[in-house]
Image 1 (cartoon, helix red, strand yellow):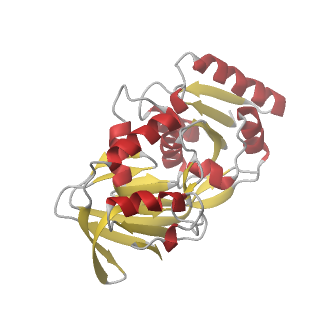
Image 2 (cartoon, rainbow, N blue to C red):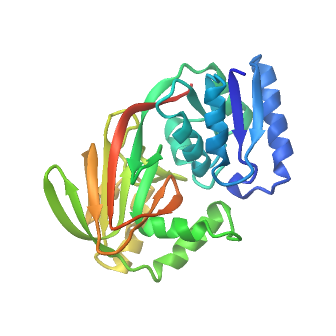
Length: 293
């Protein structure tokens, strides 16, 4: 099969019963494009990575991930450093990378877009040995990601927004030591984001100048002056002016080491992970092919 479509049936808060409808849309889109392909459905966390690796082994030229940022992370991680291209059908809570790349919102259109596209290379980030295609984060957003991943949580954008608002009331920032370019910077930060692309999703642009193909990551350090100031700064995430917020600094870099006195929770494309007291991040230039018209 030259094309494989991997569907997360519950992405974006959908019910498992939505799987059949998504599979039918995918098959119809492949038939309309005259493209031989297979459609498979994930059954558990990590399954998307396994299915994508199998598709590469079987010689697929294009693997389309239908889901949210977590599904893209699983599939994209398996495709990195191979000749197989990643296609995207956005179906998550934020869809940051899909929005940044201009992927069509309607599933059939997104599939048609991927099938006819000429693949191009984008960068891939890495932190603590975990690859990411859009963003990795330490601090507040990682804290929220860990809470959001708890089974039974309300899914979708509204569930994420509600959880974020609740977490703002109690989250305590940590002290970090940031090593880059032979220098050490000490900071007490609300969050640290390693951005391959510009946005979290839903229009929130945490790194307005980030580009997926510049061979660099944007490190966004958001220091907290007060919780009131942090809340007041939130609108800047949506209008591309976060760099103007007092206490926010953005640096472009190829690698960075971040230390703290306590083990760090971080996330890769919204998927939480537990790390040690030291995390190393770096960029892999042009490591992933994407099929975006």
